[in-house]
Length: 168
Image (cartoon, rainbow, N blue to C red; front, side):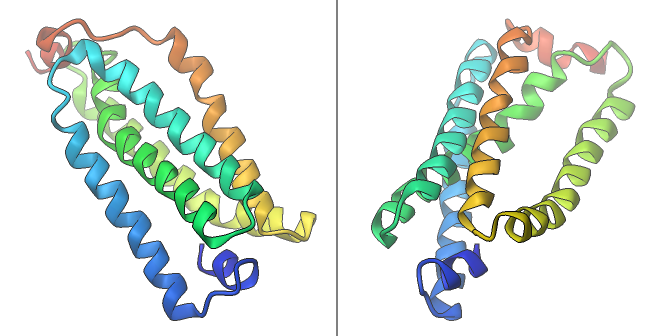
């Protein structure tokens, strides 16, 4: 974000870091809002909304040329990230076999850690190969929207019993 903001939008590093902080605050606000989605049957639709907001936000950021529109696009992506971060595990929890929560929880968070670790070098390689920082948003948007395919086939939790059955 900071290099993109600096090199593409011409922001000074201090202002670019505030822009990144605004993304984090927006994501945090969406996480809090997602916490109010109490009915498990609503987790999957709100998770899909988060995926769409984040993916489309990144694609819009790639296409935007003004700081205002890039900021609007990134606000959408931040809201989506907050929904994904909060509701992703609750949907995953409904798929955990009874009595196996430890291993599956470790798997979920390990895969997230690996994805996070790979994102930075992949972004660097993408910029090097394309010569454009906008390509990061294109790749991120496309990859995020691709998550809608498996999500469409994931079962929806029907109630609290689905979310806690692995604890019994």
